[in-house]
Image (cartoon, rainbow, N blue to C red; front, top):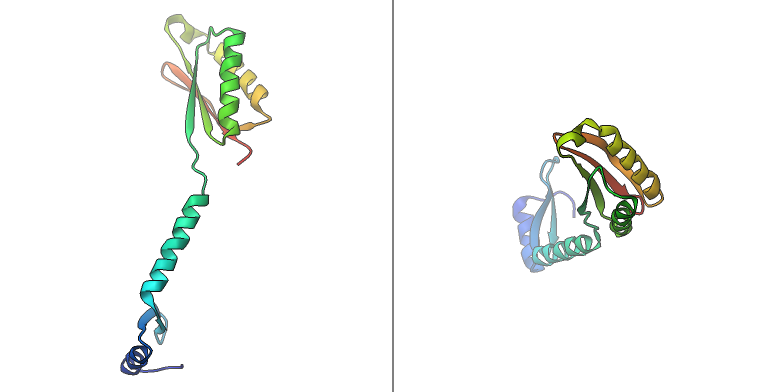
Length: 145
């Protein structure tokens, strides 16, 4: 429609029973549009809702271990972690230490490296093993998502 005064633009919007909406207030001159604002707002809400439905929410699952864990028990924990990674979740492995176990951190590092090698087909290490007081944690994320 070209450059109009505010009064003329409002008059044209009233003639077609629509709203005058300011689209770009910072440009010179400001850009306005004649449209049904309620309908536009409704469509925007619908778009946001559809986008929200399609997004994947990543959850953090925890698997707790001990340094003296048996191989079969560790395999059960690894299988559970594999299921979590297949579903797209992140998995935090937590190794808990008690008493004299604190002196043997290399055992935990060996267990964590074994877990990483077993799960490398479905996940990758996101946070390498780090010690926090009496626990050591490592986070793995799924490679599928």
